[in-house]
Length: 327
Ligand code: FUB
Image 1 (cartoon, rainbow, N blue to C red):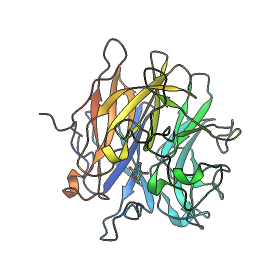
Image 2 (cartoon, protein in one colour):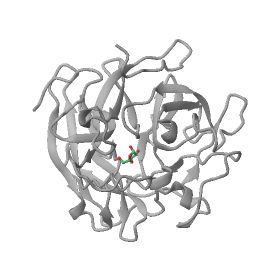
Image 3 (cartoon, rainbow, N blue to C red):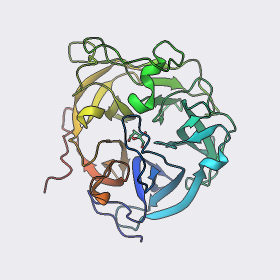
Image 4 (cartoon, rainbow, N blue to C red):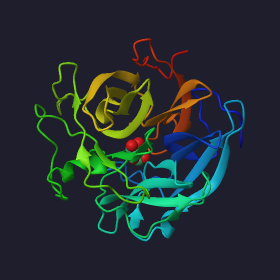
């Protein structure tokens, strides 16, 4: 079951995995993925097919060592506020504690974001009894800056419900902006020192083109859909994300973690399957992209597999586009 991983091949094959958030903790690579379930239920734009119930954490001592599956780290049954759909998680380390951030639907069917803690990066994680106040939608990604300030980026359209929060409250029937209006941006919140709550309300991030004009909702090649990730390279903040309907991973850069971010280009061309979701991490002086596709299930959207590949910067700080199937 445990083998040495190869670039652009499934990291593990004994379970379906997706949405990898990779971090270097204690000198090893830890991957916090979704754990996709093998079922024949409905597949729709609301994301009902993503019916996940637990998390397994994976680790690698380095890229020449076997992948370890640390087993169940957190289960839906142990999260009092959550009813279903444990979607894309992320993890962070601060205060000598490991934090696992995760979205799930609450008992009213509304996506919220919760936090669980552990003394070990591999868990098991103990959830807080309530979701984080002021949280909504999906796909939390937590970035801890060099000054130790932590930020949570989050939000996703369609099944992720971001459109429904445009007024600041949940409006069940709300649609997205018109195609010629600015696209909805991901949300960002500063996290409190104990990492369990937002410091103030979340704000919307602006993503603009090279002329400073907002990326429009109809610009599906570039507009934000879901799966944010922020990393820092040469003093610049890189916000990368999925374009959803056009199935790309793209990025924008800023000198401020809160934005505005200027759109730059494509990181990953479309993969097999509808969703595309990723993280970027530095290990041993090289940069890596972790992503998923549906190759392990021959293209079933909710049976995905995590992969990795090296990521390269050009001298001007732009990222070279990756075709995951180029030979
Ligand atoms: O895994 C469920 C959802 O699919 C994630 O939250 C999205 O980012 C997409 O990958």
